[in-house]
Structures are given as structure tokens and as C-alpha cells.
Length: 190
Image (cartoon, rainbow, N blue to C red; front, side, top):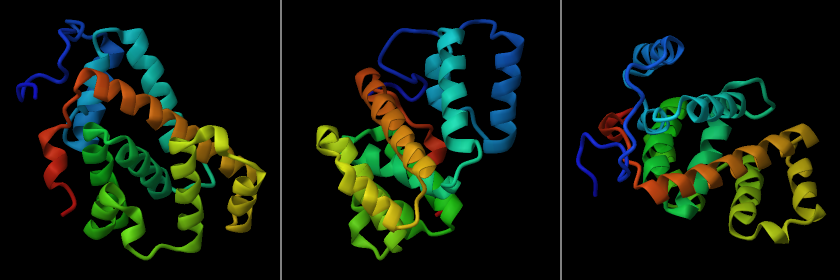
């Protein structure tokens, strides 16, 4: 495991000084979240990569969607649980706890989402997310039809797929670099 002050196992220091726009963005994170997520610090060795990451993250997780912010965080945690991504299980588990107001839900998403009762909508969504993460070549029309039957639109299905794909990518990068979650996440919304 890396030292507490080290964000990843790689020697890729943040650009110093940070560009004004990046410093402003980190300031907004500090103000709204009480921290700068380590994933952002990890990307800050290359501002173009950081900007690309934040643009797609913000679009997928914060922009208008038929999926609630909680549902998108649930997807992030289930994907990360399957992939055993330490960083994302901790960070997005905290987000599920905060958005839902339910510490049990956050824990179940990390450990076994099937361990607690969920709506039929959420079961359909997370069954799809699980299959897409574990066996993407086996997704067939019946899988999309199950989502439609649960009330998801085709646009929602796109968003479910996009969030699932994004977190499969970021989980692999976080694991490859031994990215460490911010200590603050462990105690949030408990």
C-alpha cells in the first residue's frame, strides 16, 4: 500500500503550479465536498487528461438523465464491487450513503447488492450492469427488453451502458496505479 500522502504508486507529480482553471476547479471541490478527490489529483500530472476525465465524469454523473444521481452512483459501486476496485468502492460507496441517507444501502452496494430489498427497477438495472461488466459479449435484446419492462427508456439504457463502461475503465486505471481513496470517504454519511 502507498503512503498516506501518496495518491498512487506511480511517481507522477501534479503540475506545479496548477493552471488557474484547474486550481479554481479544485477549490470548488474543496468547498462543495470538503476535499479534492484523489482521482483528480492523480490525473493532475497532465491537465489535458484531467480535463478529459472531468468532462466525461461530469457529463455521465451530473448532467440531466433519466437516471437519478443515486442510480448512477449505485451503478458505479456495483461495477467497482465486481472489479474489486478499492478506490471506487470507498469513494462511490460514500456517495451512495450520502445520496440515499441509508448507510446499509451503501454497504450493500459495495459488498453484495442482492443482500437487501430493492425496487424492481433497481434490480433490473443492476442485473444489466452486472452482466455488462462480467460478460459484455453476452448482452442480447432480452437484456434491453428487461430494462424497458422496468420503465427505462432507450436513452436511459444508453446512460446505464455509458456509466457502466466508464467505471469499468476507471476501475482498471485505479487498480493499475494503486490509487488510494481519500481518508475522508471512510467516515462520510455513516
